[in-house]
Amino acid sequence: PVGSSDPPMARPAVKALPPKHLVALAVVAILGLFLVADYLWASSRSAAPSIWPSRLDISTRPTASPPPSEKQTKGNTSTGSMDISATFADLPAPELQWKQMAEAPVPRLDGAAIQIKNLLFVFAGYGTINYVHSHVDIYNFSDNTWGGKFDMPKEMAHSHLGMVTDGRYIYVVTGQYGPQCRGPTARNFVLDTERKEWHDLPPLPVPRYAPATQLWRGRLHVMGGSKEDRHEPGLEHWSLAVKDGKALEQEWRSEIPIPRGGPHRSVTSPSCDICCCSLEMEVVRFLYRLDFLTFHILVSLNSFCAPGNTFSVKVFC
Ligand SMILES: *[C@@H]1O[C@H](CO)[C@@H](O)[C@H](O)[C@H]1NC(C)=O
Ligand SMILES: *[C@@H]1O[C@H](CO)[C@@H](O)[C@H](O)[C@H]1NC(C)=O
Image (cartoon, rainbow, N blue to C red; front, side):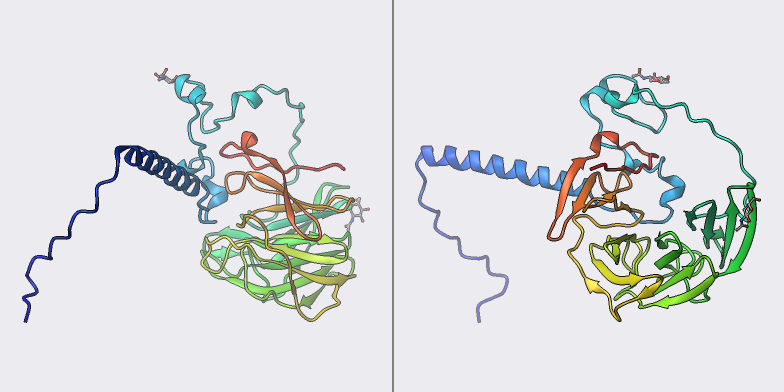
């Protein structure tokens, strides 16, 4: 038999190409290399970070910095961890007066809060990394006191909740169940804030961490968030018909996926026919508009993005 160590037979050389063709080939090869490098650079920038502990160290994470522009590398204009584009750094800001309010009954990380009239409902959250709260505290803006406190359902998530209200009912969607870096739940609940009653909603098809949640045209929309592994951005988008705290359907309907997924997005729904995602910087730098068929990009938020900034955008139409 033929020895396996035999050297492979040399192949006859390919017929030599005329020099004109060689030059054309070289140009194509260089262009190709440039495209691949550009693609790799772009995809390395859009890699989504893990959601924990995004709220703790967002300003120190090196990947959060935009690639240095020519201006930034030449000068020494760094303002700590905030590398704001010079175009926006000197815009005059309104002088906001801060006032200290009554201290909250418990410390919280990654809980959720929503205001209805003069009351602020504050849900769940970490007390420490090993302990999560399972109750709701209420702050009364009229007399600046923490007034009520009541329990959450035992099966409800404790952090990274999706949350929205219609002015009376608060819809609570999925989130992380338990302390540390536990897994998410698909369970959903609704709170009647007048009666302080909880009710079940149909579970999401799969669990999510911190999905963007909004009411729009009689439907509860849930999009994005992180998947069960905590860091993979979800693009899925579901909706459920709801009215006065009740689901009108048994199952969530699949909707058009969002263009860029991930946790900690926010969604606003102005009175006109659009639904806008104003997205936490660093993960997504775009503002999208949803209509019946497609997501449209409205504006690139690139220039406003600086490490440590979390902002929301209102769209008037
Ligand atoms: C930048 O500023 C720091 C602190 O003010 C200083 O130590 C450093 O030498 C400066 N670097 C350049 C290139 O000017
Ligand atoms: C909030 O405070 C106001 C002023 O003291 C009070 O009249 C109202 O009943 C309080 N609301 C609740 C829900 O406790």
